[in-house]
Image 1: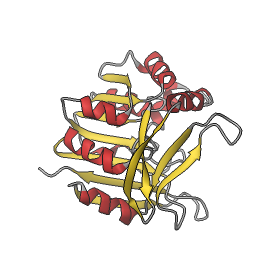
Image 2: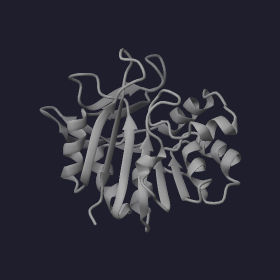
Image 3: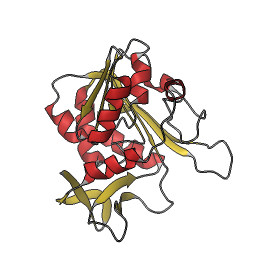
Image 4: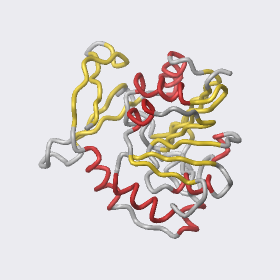
Length: 238
């Protein structure tokens, strides 16, 4: 079960009482089952797809030079695997049991690659260690209330540690929490939320929760008429 917060009717950055939802892990399991399998070589080559276009945009250099990393929502586990091949102790969490099963089967042999089935806020609440870099590639940071998640990430970063995340830019004029029915309009009552802000909105939220060295922007797509990618980096102060 996942707990999400509903927006205050007059201020989308304020949240009212939490609402319980169910079936979210099952939704991501179904999503995982529909992903085409690529070769290991292709998976490692395109592992850091901060952008939705293969071979486009920045790579793992956005993480700096970490010795330890944590991915929030690892999907196929490719980014965790790519970091592990560079000698980095790379951990990933994902709420989907199927994603976790697939990632372990494919990448579990790599020294330094660790895959955990967990919900992001629960995992960070229970964690007793810190990481050099925490990141989310179209992952949990997009799907979790930032007023809950950003403070937890801040606590789990080492002083000077780095947060990096990417996801789609918001639809113009539609900011704050966005909801959709995960099983369609004829399916079970399962829903997911995403949080949408312009770069300036994300920068304000990051400052609010104590981050510094903030850079938030929309990376242009490879063609002018295509959708860009929102990418943000921030640091826990030393």
